[in-house]
Length: 399
Image (cartoon, rainbow, N blue to C red; front, side, top):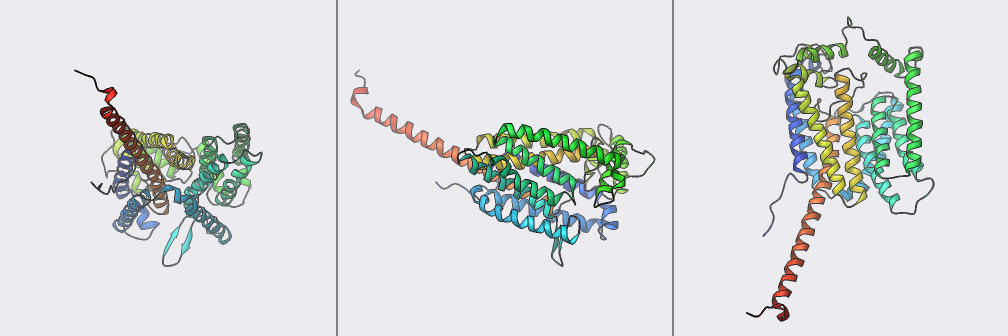
């Protein structure tokens, strides 16, 4: 009997989480898009919301499509996608267009969003390849080369994305058990350099007029020494959280979301709290925690290192990005510009993270197929053993 085609292949819990986050996104973006649609995007709120809806539907399609492709093919595909993303990042850097690469009359996208996912898959393949070869002294450093190159190209326009890429990639080296001594030594160096850079930005960063350093310094100083009388995005986000209380003021009743240009992106979590309360914030955090837990389960069940590392890396990236965005929204971290995965206004970030989720679901689908095949083999072996016992006259007891 032929099996029916399962459109939602992979882990059912991840599908539930993804669709719940998408549903929350549609409601939250509809409630917050007004000012930004008129002032920033030069359009109407309904038109921009419909555009977001199209991106959400396109992402659903991308996740479903990718989940039905054998994840082993992604090793070669994403190698070329990663190289193209580096070229795109280089073009953006040379042209000085900050984060966006614009194709006239077609689309605009952030190459860093493509680099995030493609680098992790490329790195997963190289870590798995290194595990199949005799250990070499320079393996750890060679694996870090594409990570460092990517971060160098990303950081000038988007510091927080560069940090996220490095964090997820570095954790992948830990998951892949790549020279733990060098890993811990490298972590100590990174923390010391990071702390030193952090201190320099805070103390003398305002005197360095190069690139986005003044912006980073201003954000850092505003976080350490906030001015409650200044009408900034972060202050309005804190006021929105305070106004929301535990149960919120009701969907569509936001006051601060109508005054913020980034209410639908960086600070959408604070507006959700304003409208639906801390209870909604707890639910959303629980969804991301559940998402990461399922990724760990899928990675643990995978028989091959490549699939396991893909799931661990992409799952870590999505979870870390969610934690960073939520922390910024409630004032725990300075402003970073990171979106809330699968909830913030959609675009290239929404679509490419959805592609990453599709890779995770592809691995989960493959795990299920292998488990089903192993069960069928075990059942056939048990049936064969039973049949042999039935026809063996020595095993037949006389009445």
